[in-house]
Length: 273
Image 1: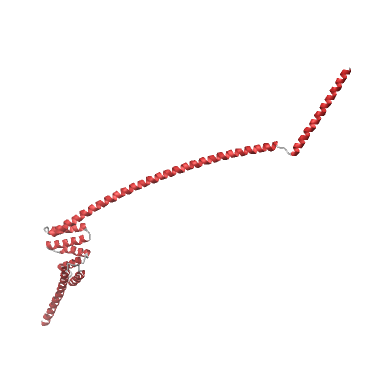
Image 2 (image 1 turned 180 degrees about the horizontal axis):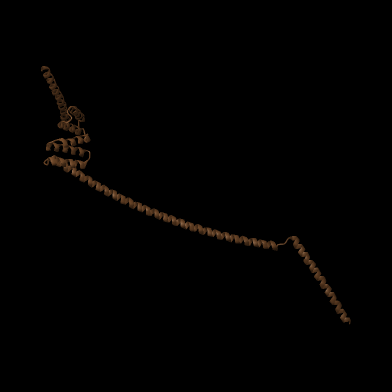
């Protein structure tokens, strides 16, 4: 029996020591957390980080302790680890029992979401907090602030959309203007090209007419030259022709003399008779 009693006493002592170690981690974490909060000149992320380490040591022994998990979520939030903090506060809001505790968890969840510019999500979290604790003025203020940010964001978005639309319309007008300008330019170019084509055609026609005229003149000149060549006789031909004319003239003169002599003879005969 003594041996059994001794074993029982040792077991009880071990549980007590483990419990003391867990609470020691929590005490150390709380001390570091409070020291970091007292220094308002800066955000002492080192001490908040050390507090987180102590809280995690305790939770390794007792992971389901809601209060210690709440302290860990606070330490994460103070280090600006807002996504991790939000995850913790969301779990706590679902697991905590009293309305005040649930409201506090949802309030801090909303703060974590708001710090990440998740405005719609933060509004829903603040509303959950107020459903648990409708008289919480701080949550009401934060909800109103988040709603104001949402409205401002919507107005900015609306203004941006309007500016985008105006810019688009302006761009469309500029495009239309540029298109009309380009169309006119193309039309003028086409017109100039057409005029140029017409001028080129006219010039070609004139060249053709000129060529025809030149051809006619050349043909006429060639014809004249041919005629001149035909009319023109060589020196030998001219001498032969002149000789022939002279011979003909001698024959004519001889014939005339002969006729005169015959006439004179007839005249004398008639007188003698």
